[in-house]
Image (tube, rainbow, N blue to C red; front, side, top):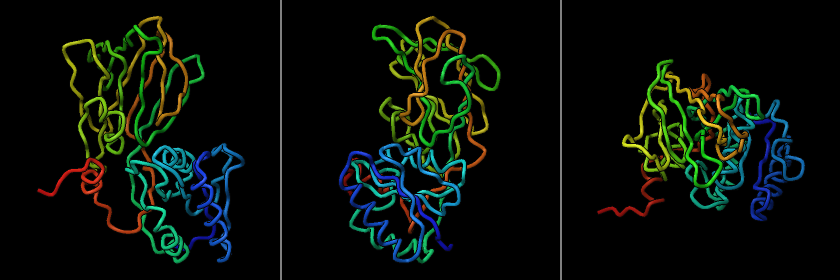
Length: 276
């Protein structure tokens, strides 16, 4: 896989990320590879048209921004961990030069991850279609209030949730907010949807695991607005009658890998699980 153009997305407020981006630009430039960077701190200014790879330099949040930028263009993303947890990122900074050499040589693979497709019916700013690698979250706006959401599964009414919020996540997102709300951990090799309530005020408080092609639809049923976020990006407030539908995206996100990546060993290391 010949690499001719690479985009760099560094964390906007970490000097280590900025220094790695400068280093990568110089090293790739020596091989005649076009390098593009965002203008200022706004990652969305990066033009991904014609890029072969996007390199994320930050933590998982930066990786999510880079995947969002590259997703619809089908550009694969390589994650360099200049953060803390690093579930999504592929390599550590001390391995960066070797990773750049492999990019130049075309010596890498691309793994596919399911994404969430989110459709919003609203008169507000959140309306339209969105994509998320990790999750969509509908949460209450006001302290002391509950989010009240009617839930349909495949067009049939299921129940009404009264909770601080609900999370719809992909397998990749199962180790993020859904996990904090006591949702299950799912291997990213699966294709499924996870529906996890946040602090539900109801007897039914378990997560649901649904097929990737099933459709979850939420309707806001009271006047106290609910905020919708996707991978940590606030999309806007929702009012009574607004609806959000979630299903597995038709196209996968594409992630650069440089060798076998054992999800279970990453999980073990991040949670400090002992061998025996």
